[in-house]
Image 1 (tube, one colour):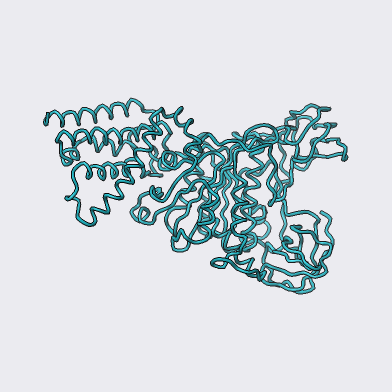
Image 2 (cartoon, rainbow, N blue to C red; image 1 turned 60 degrees about the vertical axis):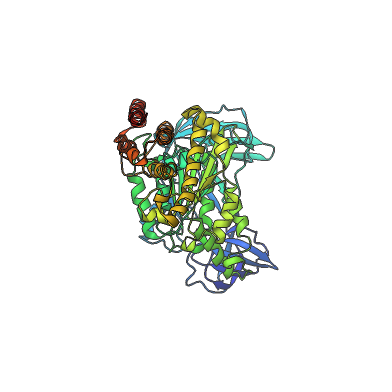
Length: 589
């Protein structure tokens, strides 16, 4: 990188620096500040002066210090070696930095995001002499046992392939191809560089028609997320946002997981960094890190790097999407990112909007979530980026700006309820506050996988839950004995549904994951009890007698005792329920 002095520091306000004599600087240019070469980015230009946000500690920096320009935007290195890596918010590899500076990141330390010494087994795919366009495959590298990393022609590059490296072991910065075009010769290695704030191009957006299966029943059945969709998980402290994202990261059927710890407490990120390598991918039996990239930007790291971290994560996700993979991005949490925007905006003396957030907060939130989607990539393959963003509203107040603006731009909302969390009901996703607008989009997939009853059963149980809320309000006023058995039975069935279906134990080997087929069979059993019990009550059977049915205990325990593929077990349980209710009805016949 050819650096040149483009300005001099005039004023320092924390991570925000004002520089003079900046006529040659460019907007969003990557710069190095001072003798320590602190990493920064130009975010404002006016009358020969530049405002720079520095991604490191500016202690010791003084007016008059030089600002070195690179002529390039803040970009990532994308290529083999991303999987299993742990980066900070601007893609500095934390493992490599720890070896140089110890526990904490030293000022001005630089390290290659991709290891230049490691050799990769390169397999050529394209044919020399072929005319290649952006997104075409040059060759492949087996990065993990599960992932074949495709080396693609970079966007906005194309031409005639005049050279392609033969099969062999190469470093990521070795030239493996040469393209000749009207603009000159392009020497390509396995590394692509891409600006973090610019979405990677695609051919078109595709209709989302397949769910992201998470194995969490309250999500998949009641509030499903489509592959390429966006969802917000708002909740106060201790309601289980991080736990829910961990469960989804482990069990969802995405090919790649990008986990962004954006401004979270150090102990939470420590748990992630220590637990993820120990977690086993249920599909391969190997470490979950073999399909995971971690972005760790804790609350004690520079606030400006926190602002960049979510763009770093989503850019990496788009890179894997371009290979035709399905990627899930876990952003934990976007509230900390919004707070970083607020702090930087305040230091730049911008006019604040509601609760001190900058007026452009909604635009930034929209730009982030718009990078999700199911796309036809430049290579013609479908690939997706699904964004699952946690929101941490102060005091659990969903009316605060970050939650409200996020809600405008996502189509799925999993609101966490403190009362459920306090009652140890996990996942603590409220069935009253949550919703999904993807149900109609993915309905055909569910009908194929779970049968024609899925849509009807889902609508029926949601209606029962809504009826329960109204009935519980009456119970608070006049007591349960004032209700007839038919209405008390609604409350009874909903309690059964919450205990037997919605509540899920992440530590149980059977209950921690439920396949779509098992979810439909479990829901069908609960509704069978509702339908047959309602008929029995009409024939004179009391609700007290229905409660005494032994089979109810088996229904509550079915999530622990019946496996995903045990269709016979569910059939026997349904038959036992039918016989038990029929015997009660026979008494009153």
